[in-house]
Each structure stands twice: as structure tokens, then as C-alpha cells.
Image 1: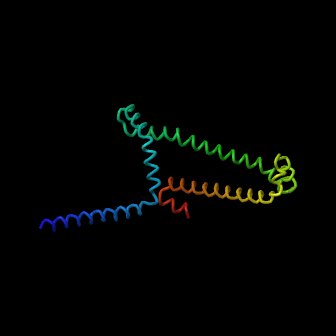
Image 2: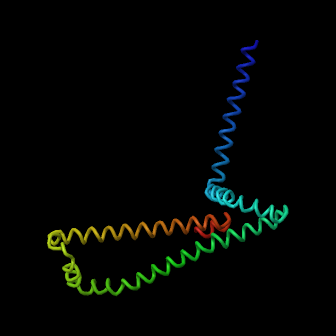
Image 3: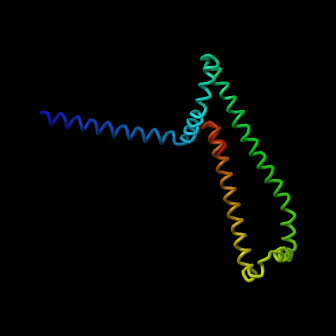
Length: 175
């Protein structure tokens, strides 16, 4: 009789494990869109926990005041500087593109200007036979770099929208 009951116990355990795996898979499928948001929230919460604990001691176990102060400090100490830094990067990129634009337009309007500019390069004599290949390669490299930057900027923007927008608004933003 004992072997029969131990077989039932093993079968129950196997069924329970199978049920656990199926329920976990369904749960992950349901929250798949929010997994990155949840992961980032957990990471940022863990990073802010020591500050929160210090403030909790400082404010004598006032949880709401400690939480609010932690959020304000993190916002002013992390979010604002990152936003300002990205603004500076964008403004510098605009300035560089405006500074380079006249030179590029000049090179487009006067094809010989490129030759004059390349003649100033010390080792250009050895590269002259490969000029067409070099220009083609540089054009392709520039196109790939531009595509890479635009794709990553679009992905970062979409990721930010997904992180900041609730699910209802996210559907409207993405369509």
C-alpha cells in the first residue's frame, strides 16, 4: 500500500509544479509590457532605500515625509541634471550641425573644393587611386551611423514613453 500512496504524492507534486509553471507563464505573458518598468522601478527603489532610511530616522519615523523628501532629492539630484545634460548635448549637436552645414554645402556646390581640401592631407598621394572607393565607403559609414543614431533615439524615446505613460495612454501614443 505504501508504494501506491508515494506514487500519488509524487504525482501531486508534479501536477503542482506543472500548475505553478503554467500560472507563472500566463502571469509573465500578462505583464510582459510592464516588465522593464517594474525592473527599473525596483532598481531605482533599491538605490534610494539608504537615503529613505536615513531620512526616516531623521524625521522620526514619519514615512510620508521621508518618502516625499526622498522623491524630491532624487528628482533634483538625478532627473534634473540628466535632463539638463541631455539638453546641453542636443544644443551642442545643433550648433555643430549649423557650423558644418556651410562647409558641406560648399563641397556639394563645388566638387573641386573636396579635391583642394584633400590635397592638404600629407599622405593623399598614396590614397588618390582609391579616392572613389574611400568616398563611397565614407558615405556608407555616414549613412549607417546616422541610421544607428536615429534608430536608437527612436527606441529611447519609445522606451521613455512606455516607462512614463500608463498602459491606456501608451496605446494612444504608439498609434
